[in-house]
Image (tube, rainbow, N blue to C red):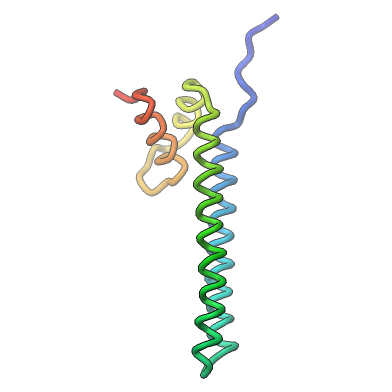
Length: 110
């Protein structure tokens, strides 16, 4: 039987998590704008709405962080290297930075 590469698409899964996080952040921003406009003149309502939205945002960040950590931990060294090679390795690319951080944590970077 031929030895085939892993079918685990680490970079694709990481980019999907980042897209979910970005969608949640955008929805949070829209919610804040709508809440401010809908409750103009009643600061107590804005504060209550903002607190609920802020809590939802914190939960999304926690979920993103734990899912990302789980994804990184479950990846093999070769999968990490391969996924990182598929990126441009540019600063500001959250996927590349996340992969590089995990490679460094595992002492796999020169």
